[in-house]
Length: 487
Image (cartoon, rainbow, N blue to C red; front, side, top):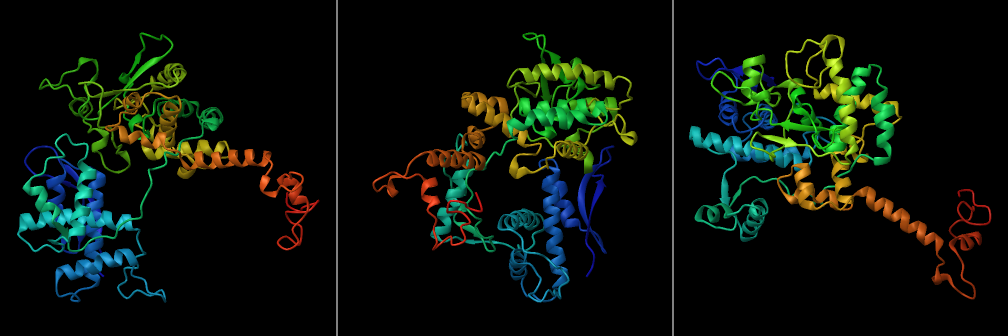
C-alpha cells in the first residue's frame, strides 16, 4: 500500500516575507493539494489542533481508499463503508486483515469527530471544485427534523437573536447527512475532579519544592500557585511575561498578575512599534523576531483557550483565593527574578528552562509536565486525571473552593473567566468523590444505629447479628460468627 505521511510544511502564499506553517499529507504523487487548499483557506480562523484533526481524518480516508481500489461503484458507498470500518475496525476474528490497515474499533465520539472533520472538507471541495459530495444531504424524516432542531437550539439558546427563525434555518432542519455517525452514550454533567486539598501542602513543599535544582523548584512552585491559587490553566501560565507581575497597591505583601492575550494583548511599558501598533504579536516580531506561542508548531506551541478578557488591553486579571497564595507568590517571585538575572534570554517569557542544553529558553508544556510528574513521584503519588492528580485538576480545585465558599456564581464566572454561567456548573454539581464520601458517611451513621427490622424482644445491632453466624451463606465463618476471619 502506498505510504501517506503527515508532515509540517512552510507555505508561501504571496511575495511577503511571512510563511504559513501547516500540516499536510505527502503521497508518492507529492502533496495532496485539495487538502492543502482547504487548510490554507481556514488557517486564519481555526487553530492548529483543528488542522491536525482534519489532516488526520483525511489521511485515514485516503489510506482506506488506497486499500480498497476498484471495490466501490459510487463515492458515497465507499464513504459509508469507511465510516463503518472506523467503528468496527478492520481486523477479522482470526486476527487477519487483507487490507493491511489493521484498524482497531474507535469510540462513537471519536468516529463522529472524524466524520465532522471530513464533512467540512468535502463540503468545501464541492463548493470550490464543483465536485460530487461523498456525503451529501438528504431529506430528513420528521423525527430527524426534531433532533436537528433540538441540536440547533442547544447550540444557540444563549444567542441574543437565537429565537428568530428564518427560511435558511427551516431548510437546514429538513436535511440530514446521508452517512451519519451513531448516537453517542448519554453523558451526565462533567465531573470537575479537583486536586485533593489535603494533598496540596505536601505536594507543594515535599514534591515540587524538593527538586534537585532550586531554580526549578521555585519556578514550578510559582506555576503551581497560578493554577491552584488563581485558577489558570497550565498553558495560560506559560504565556506569562516578566512584565506582567505588578506590586499590589492594596496589599504590599502581595502582587497583581495579569495574563495578556498572546497576540492581541497590549505590549508592556507603553511600547509602540514602527507602525504605531501596540500588540504583543507586533512586539514579539519587531524586538525578538518571534511569533506568539499559540501560533507556533510542535513542542514550542502553547495553546490559549480564554475568550473573555477583563480590559480593552486584552488581559485577564487573576484573583487569588485565598489571598495568602498571592503573598506566597510575591515572596517566591522576588527569589525567582534573581535566578533570571544572569541568563541570556531571547524572549520576554517569565518561565524558562534551567536544563543545560536549553538554558534560558522558554519553558515548554512537555518539560513542565515531566517536572510535575517527577514531583508527584517524590511524594509517592502518580499523575492521574481520574483521581484529580493532574495539572488541570488545580483549576478545578480553585473552582470548587469558590463554590464551597458560597461565592456568588457571577463572581466565580468572573474569576474563572468563563463565557457562560453554565461553564461553572461542574463545580456545583456533586462529583464522583462527593458521592463516594457521602455514601461512606451515611454508612457510618447507619452502623451506629440499631435496625428495627430485626427487632424482636431486644433491638440488635449489626455487630450482634453477625456474631450469630450464617451457616447457609457463610459456612466457613469468613465474615460472620464470634471470630470472623475477615473483619
